[in-house]
Amino acid sequence: MIEATLENSVGRITLNRPEVHNSLTRETMNNIRAVLKDWANSDIRVLVLTGTGKSFCSGVSLGDVGTGDWSNNPLTALCDALENFHTPTICALNGGVYGGGVELALSCDFRVGTEGMKMFVPAVKIGVHYDAAGIGRYVQKLGSQTARRVFLLAEKFEDHALLDIGFLDYLVAADKLGERVDDLTSTINSAAPLAVQGMKRTILETSRGSLDTEAAEQRTAQCFASEDHREGLAALSEKRNPVFKGR
Image (cartoon, rainbow, N blue to C red; front, side):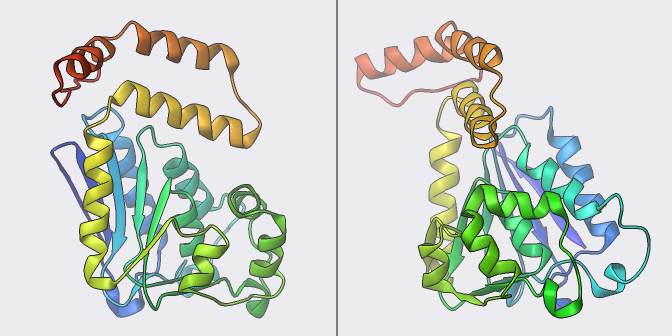
C-alpha cells in the first residue's frame, strides 16, 4: 500500500505497510510506477519517497520473490522509472533499508538517512543472483568495490558507514528527518525548473557514459532563451528572490 500526494509542486510517495517493513509486492511496484507516469506531465518540481514505521523498505516481498516469472523484473522497471523521472528525487530513509529497498533508494538523486539505520542486501544468503541491471546501478552509484561488499559478502552497513561509502548524502536524528527533507525540497522548488531538470538529465547521462551532446546543448540554449533566465538576472539586479515559472 502506498500514499501519494502532490501539493505546491512537491510530490510525496509513502510506503505504508509498516507491519511488514514496507516490503514491495508486484502490486505496490506497479502502483508506484503508475503514480510516476501520472505525474510526468504535472507541475511537479521535486519528488520525495519515504516510508512509515521502523524501516524504509525491506525489499521485494518474499512471497513474490519465490513465485512467478522474473525475467521481466518489476523492481528493475520501477527503479528505472524512478531514476529517469524528470525532476529531482529525494529518498527520506525513515529507518533501515534492505534487499531491493536499497536499490529503490539508490534510484533517487538524494538520500537522507536517520541515525541508527542499517543497510544490507542478503541475496547470496538466499541463493539469489541479483538482477544484472540492479548490480549495474550499484556499481554506477557506489563503485565496483562497494558493490562486491554489498553482494558477495552481504555486508551490513551502519549509519556512519553509509555516509562513508556515499550511499547517504545526509545523516540526521530521526526527529530531524522531515525538517532536513523540507529544506532540500524548498531549495529545489525555488530554483529554475528548466535548468534543474535539464542538468539532472545531463548528469544522469554523463554518469552512464551515454550523454547525448546535441540534446544537452539544446537544453542549455533553451535555458539561456527562457523567461526564467531573464527573471533570474532581474532578481539578482534588484536584490530580490526570483519567481520562476518553468518557461
